[in-house]
Image (cartoon, rainbow, N blue to C red; front, side, top):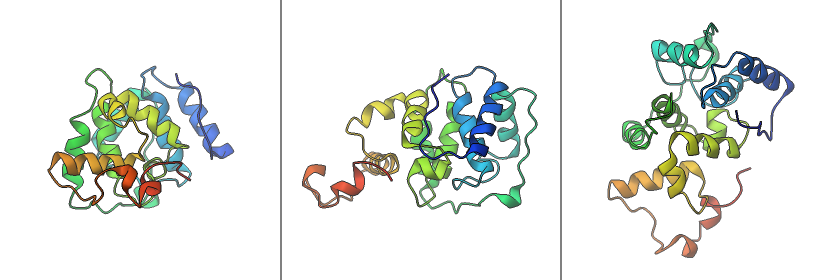
Length: 191
């Protein structure tokens, strides 16, 4: 289990996260799923009640990581993100990088693509407590993406840039990131 990494958690969120981990199955993604559930429960992020997985797949995810836990969130309490036209392309791009040996990595691809439809930083749209948690989630589930982001670009910007380059679309006018006037909006701390 990873050490707790939080920069903005409430006592309620912390208690729920701890409770979930007390019932965790011992899979590498248990802590991240616990963070997602705890964040959703306290109203953080843009994920719908089923995290974009659909009811059946979401129930299987919860059962895999927290056996015996029955958690059926009220759909009316969660946001309903608008899936932009690039959603399917983004989902396939992220899923193509999912680690085959990590239980739940393909589910995480759906969850991440769904959260990318939000307007904040990806870690915030996921309802994670910090960007560091997101970086660890990506390193575990999508190690090739983690390795490719070797300059610590903000994750959502990195995913979209990589997707665009994969499709042969080059939206940046600057010859390199260092020469770009928007460098600070792509790199540096996320607040």
